[in-house]
Image (cartoon, rainbow, N blue to C red):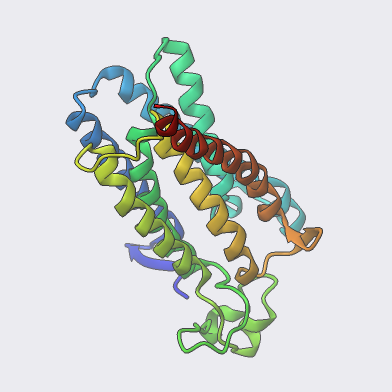
Amino acid sequence: MLPVLFHIGVTPIWSHSFFSAIGMLVAITMAWRIARRQRRESIELVWIISGGVTGAALMARYGLVVKYLLAASSPSIAGFLRYGGASLLGGLAGAYLGVVLVKRLIGYRQHTGDLLVPGVALGIAIGRVGCHLAERPGTPTSLPWGVHVPPPFAATVPECPACLSGAAMHPSFLYESLVLLAAAAWLYPRAMRTTPMPAWMRDGDLFRLFLLTYACARFLLEYVRGNPRMLFGMSGSQLTVLAAIVPLTILFARRAASARVAPSLA
């Protein structure tokens, strides 16, 4: 583990914050590139992207406030800013709410999810590298690519007996990065319109399909993350993404069924 990536003078540059910032810059750059390709760059889009970034930054931290207050013996703002990285699910929710709010405030009617989502996928993939360096990797494993937490940092990782024992653990955050890289590679040419989308997909469906793909992947990856179980043997993250998996699966199943029926009626 490498929670502090490097120093600038005496100022530590935290791995999680560094890779999150790089991921956000990549996401914004890619979104603007796609918008230019579709001739949709505008000051309104700048405001919308800014709303998404602000919402993500706020909500990613909000979900950790209570946990930090319970865990810290002497809570402080500086301690909270270093504590536990950020909540990705909270960040995604915040980004969505930020985009929706700004679009309503400025009266912007067009879909923007398809412009933003390839960069979001790639940005999260980059950010998860910081999580891998700064947080508990995952559950113990005998697989050859299992990772070990170096002894100097083992005692600083909360709720991780495997860290203290030196056991090999799943690099769960890197698994997630690989899934997100594959998603970004599939989404980008379709958002750029260099590869056609399936006939049954509509505007906004690239964003919805990403949400479904990520929700399914996150649900499965939770089994090697080692997060506490809350209900029916599932973690809080699994319960959260399940609420997205069910309606999105029904939506796309209906779309695909309609696409099969339509040619037969013709």
